[in-house]
Length: 379
Ligand SMILES: O=C(O)CCC(=O)C(=O)O
Ligand SMILES: [Fe+2]
Image 1 (cartoon, rainbow, N blue to C red):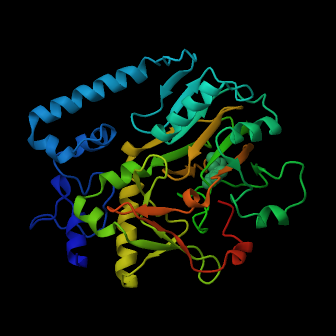
Image 2: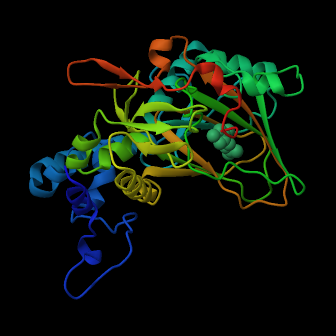
Image 3: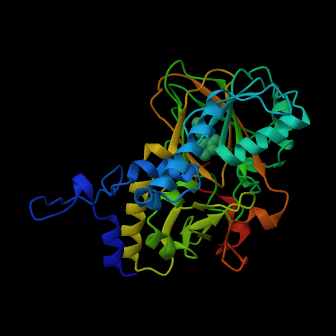
């Protein structure tokens, strides 16, 4: 595919199309500017594993998908109680990503609850709990260990933790901001993609939520991958991008990352850590990344937004979603504590793309692991 072909894929359509009478000079590709006439089916179709383009032309097929979605959403909206009778109530935050699970005490989880939460995490990419302010740091860590191993701030990378003042809980990352120390991770990212072993996920607890603002937004990267034009998917599949700092902590990750549990592919680039697409001229890579980001971060259909209260928790799958902490709450205090989850096996922990023959193509660290001693930011 040539650069021209790629440009064509991103050309505005519908109301925003370029024609003789209407000459847009921007390169906007987000929102619905690159839309096609069936776009309103796109996000629902992804949830049903359906083909939105076929839905546009095949009415019977579309009706079957509609039925599937009605049933699925009704089940969710009823806050279904599991057949195992675990008494958990679930409440979707959006149709595709995010779910609040009620009736959980993180300090006291049954085996069935762990399994249910794990399943929900795989399906919904981020799971929220309320009213967990009572849990101790030990219990926070112990909760994480029901699902995976726990790491330090950067997952397997211990460097920063080692440089911090010793604490009784090196596994608990404290994120504090107030008037004098304003801070928010207000940049789209998935954690630690400058490493070849980014953490599997995190369990973030609001010890003190601001009275207003400071929400966190999550975006579903599997839906983002699915929503790309098929020709662009084909172009990107098997390609890699460089993340990190030149000569310091550079790693080559697949752009389409296959999830080790669900087998689904996620769009695995982010403007915080990704530098360039391999095998493309710098200008072409920059242009394509910019367009992909514009699409990724301006499609609210694939996002959910969580409003924190004291004791609220977000547990995310770092392989299938990205997040952004909204920096609108200054001068208020916001204190978050995070336990970082890592895979037990390096085989699953190192990102990979699974090709059609079932072969895994792993990320490659371009600098030595030791050179990650001074990581990029905290995220
Ligand atoms: O503060 C937040 O809401 C998110 C912070 C963050 O990016 C992280 O913990 O990885
Ligand atoms: Fe983060």
